[in-house]
Length: 115
Length: 115
Image: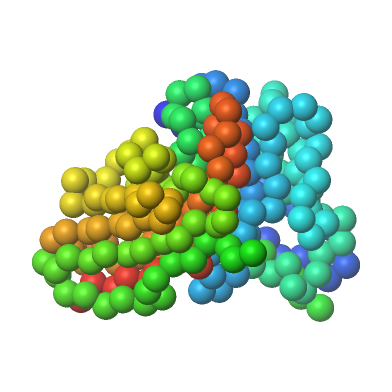
């Protein structure tokens, strides 16, 4: 069955330091991968996606993610964290050839950036 | 350009009642998906509408039904409400793309509380 795992419930980073939010997936076909961010009492905002091509994907607000097929991972990264990056981050996978357009989400990772 | 809008923002119902939630997609989008996000969880796919028809459905009972109108807006109806239906209901819109490569953009959600 298709699934997404975000192994860390919470990630704590000091402002200015690099951050990584981890995501691993399990799908039977070639996956499409997405990252979204959710601020309190808000909907999800799209950050970036991987469909095909270059394994390093650049997105909004300085975020990037690297697709690693052998490790079935799609970790979100940012070279220098800001306090305003503090939010809930969701990884999602789409298995287009077996599951159509639905997104399967992980449980979320709470990112806390301290000054 | 308005993004995805949802109404109402909050709703309180009692067990056994019925509820209707509404969604207007982003301009230029023709596909609407609905997700349920329980507290502390990632969103779960309910169903997707395209050309006024349910195109795909997740693992939700028949109490959950929907509709898409000719202007692409959509409604989510839930009958015989249970306490467990309390959640944030998210609508996402996209423009249908080949091989399901589209990006879903989310609205702010409707917070449903069932007492």
